[in-house]
Amino acid sequence: MVDGKPPHPPRRAARLNHEILVAYRTMDGFITDWAVNISKGGLFVNTRAPLPVGSQVRLIVSLPNAAFPFDLQGKVSWVNEFDNASNLVPGMGIEFVDIDEDKKARIADFVETLRKDLPEA
Image (cartoon, rainbow, N blue to C red; front, side, top):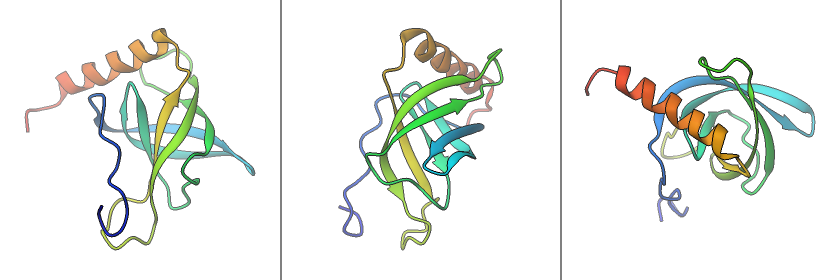
């Protein structure tokens, strides 16, 4: 545990730090925020008002190499509150659910293509 909270779930897929515009539905309508990293299994949305863990969300994700935005379903897996003692980026980790193999492969290809284009750390 970190600061009385369980650690984030282990990552199951390579993740890429890259800003991507994402919209998601809340009770008040659609909100647009930035996803600051993405993998074929999910993404992290930078927001000061994260939804509660377990919330089901409908996501509209715009990838630069896609002709149309992806319409995806997700579940909030973990949250960093805005005012946290660890100074973590506020937001929510969203795991994709019921994603078809074509979309999963296209997201993985996007992540891999960008990873190749990035300079070595």
